[in-house]
Amino acid sequence: MRLNKIVCVVFYLNFALFCYAGINKQREILEQFKQIAQKEYESNRDMEAAIFLLDSLISATSFTESEFISVVNRTGEVFHQQGNLIPVIELFSATVNYYKQYNSLANDQVKSLISLLIPLGAAYEELGMWNRAADFYREAIALAEERHLENIKALIYNNIGAIHYNHGELDKAEEYFQKAIVINEESGNKIELFNNYNNLGGVYVMRRIYDKALDCALLAIQQLNREQNANLYYFMQTNIAHLHLLKKDMNLAFSYLNNSRNNQENLGFNNDLVQTYLMLSKASEEIGQKDSARLYMEKAVAQARRINNKYIESHILSEAAHFYKRNGQIEKAYPALQKATEINDSILLEDNRQKISNMERMYIAEKKNRENEMEIKNITLQKLASDRQRIIFVTIAIFLIVAVLYLINYSKTKERERKKEELLLLQQKELHRKEQELQKQKEQELSSTIELKNRELTSFTLSLTKNSEFITDLIDNLKRLSLEVKEKQAKESIRMIINKLSIRNSTDNWEEFSYYFEKVHPSFYQNLEKQYSGLTVKEKRLCALLHLGLSSKEIAAITFKEVRSVESARNRLRKRLGVGQEQNLTEFIQNIR
Image 1 (tube, rainbow, N blue to C red):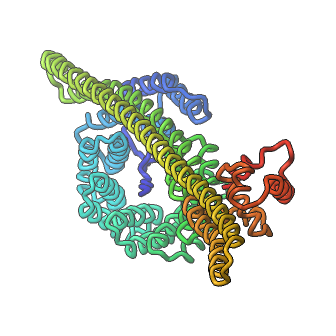
Image 2 (spheres, rainbow, N blue to C red):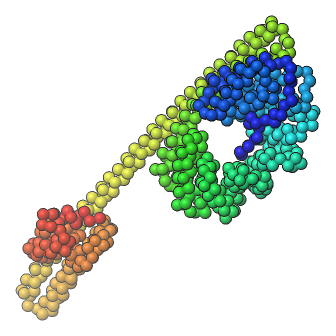
Image 3 (cartoon, helix red, strand yellow):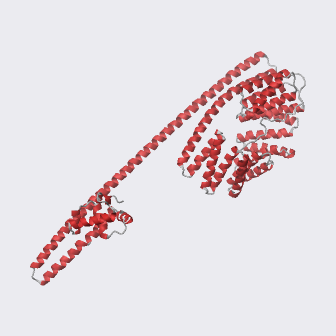
């Protein structure tokens, strides 16, 4: 949820302030702000202008309260724009204490004090110190209710609702957002209504009540002027498209997204384009348009890199990694995830440094604030020194303990992650090794089985050869016996036996051979026919015998041909297969798979 709270550092500061004593204290505060500004200085026109205003007022003989507040307002606004929240806290804490020294304040002065308490609470809220932020908001709401300042009450209600939202207290958040809406509806404050409805929509999104969330989003966008609030207007169109996407209203989702994309591209809203491209990628993927989904995801990644925002780039790269993984593009998913992890690590490191820096600055700011409050309340110097020393020691001890515990926990977490990664890598290597061993074992077993079958088939073939030779010899003996036998009936019986043996010797053996050969080499004939179609039965039979590694002499014995005839058949087969004379025909046929 995007909480666009108009509470940053722009205040309702139409002060009619004191025109008497206090100018020295004001000048002291301005001197303090100048030192902070010079220390936090970044080369830009806004900071240069703020320092110029501080110098002008400090060097002036006198100045009005409105001039003083105007400079405070401008300086705080510049710090907040640069993301320097600690100087904002220091700045407004000192100014709040300045106003609290007076026993009674006029309405305009109360408004000024409230306008300082609100950004002070907002700064603590952005630092995650929600309890401290709530204290300032409660103080501001009490003053607003006392003076019946309804518009300011609505602003504070919105901020308190945001705190409850961040705590996950959705019922409380809804209650405060509704209170703010009632007040702003009456006053017609459209920008604040936009914030209220947008925030309330976020509550319904968390509850997965998408119809109500969509109603709130539509009410929010109606509060915006398309020309004056173009960036918010088209960003809200992207949000509305997301809600339609959650509801599976794809046509409406694409309509909003395409309109938002076109205008954001034309107007140069580069940061918002990243989210729009991402939503277009998700919507395209949802309807199965993978090419469009990939194109928009690549645009989102490229745009995220161009705007040079680590948080956005890390988020988009993570989304891209998941997208590529879902679509089976692991070669793209891994680099994207790796880069996202690297950026997250650098962000974490920078955040840790910033937290330590903020802790130190917060300590200094709180210390100064306590000193000012003690001075206002006129506490004795001895009590002030004693309390300050005790608080300092406790605070330092807490900060050191927290820092040490955090570093220890961070170190242990990193070590656990490293060990998990090493263990996972070892397990993957071991699994790969076992898979290779198993594959090798299977291949060896298969090779051994084939070799055994080949030996059996060769033995069977040689056995056929012996049987053929035996039958041939038996036929020859029977023929000689027929010549010697005189009886006609006996001769006819011998002739019939010779015919049966000849038929048996020429057909049955080959059918049995083919049966067993195909058992051992089931795909040989199929692959042979696929690669060399048109071979005759005899040529295929010769290929099978050569595949078994039989010599021409052995083939001649099986086929009852002369060796010279077998050699001629081999030469003809060599030509049919396109095998050169320098290549071994038997090896060539054995390589047919």
